[in-house]
Amino acid sequence: MTAQKARFGQPRPAVSGRREDETCPWQIAFEVERIPGGVVTVYVPGAPDPWSGSVCFMTEDRIQAIDPAMPRVLKTLNDLGKGSNEQLRAYFKHK
Image (cartoon, rainbow, N blue to C red; front, side, top):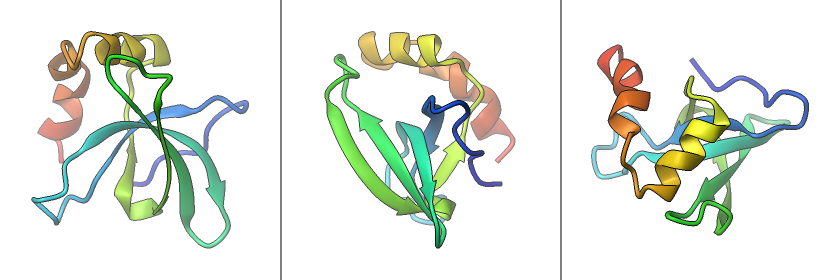
């Protein structure tokens, strides 16, 4: 499953990484938009300041939508990852 298109111009919470590459860490990210040809524009926020980060371009297979709402994800980043277990437990359990 690939991340769904960001709604109403709002970035959609996601994780980026590669399931088949154990050396590639998963990161909290936000899908910003889709570019024709299977490329996704992704913002990878910093922690504890999520407003400082990097814009990346990656293929669809490297991005996975997650369910937590934006405010919860931002709080987890502000708290240096605390709370991520609760937010991501269901995602990693089923994959």
